Image (cartoon, rainbow, N blue to C red; front, side, top):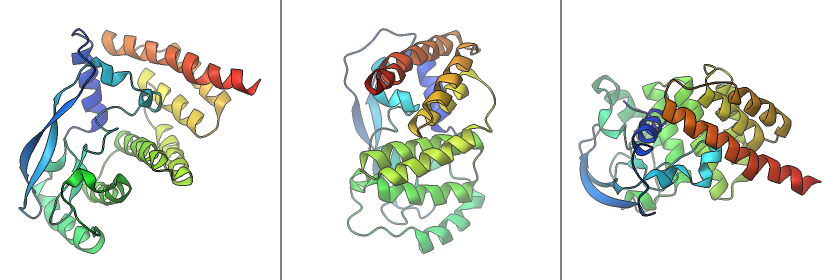
Length: 240
């Protein structure tokens, strides 16, 4: 199964090699069978996008399209299995029974569930969290998941809940391997949880590191520079 961090890294490597496209994304319907209950669902998948998706301001939280949309998290219309679009059909057979039992207890959704992307992410994300607890995931995944939670909770106006998600992501990020990407994530999370000086220090550390992929390394170098100019330095200038 490919989590979004690995998917984003693959997309970065592919998209940085091609010229920019018109700034629009399109989606198309696909028919997907739920691996837990067998229900047929109509979901959406991206049909077109370009390098511009890596220039959204969400990049400063290391959260990227399509996770910034309401469509990236699939939810079955019947049993309410909820997972990243890259994971939904890849549920291991040995986990189906445990997921079915958990969803029966904890997967209730009030009101209409069609189309799936009209269900608020504040409703779907907690179900996805329980799904991934059953499936089992590593620190990289949970750091990513909490960052996505924080992003959408803030959009929904749930500031305290967003802060709690980011603090959880921060604690998890401290256990990740020391790479340029992870050091930027650590700096970002410190900034968005109020530790500006810590963010500055971790950005300096990130600047000393190199990613094994030249393309990703270049992207991260530009991201660090943009973060300083558009986020960190702007805050400093406002506070003076």
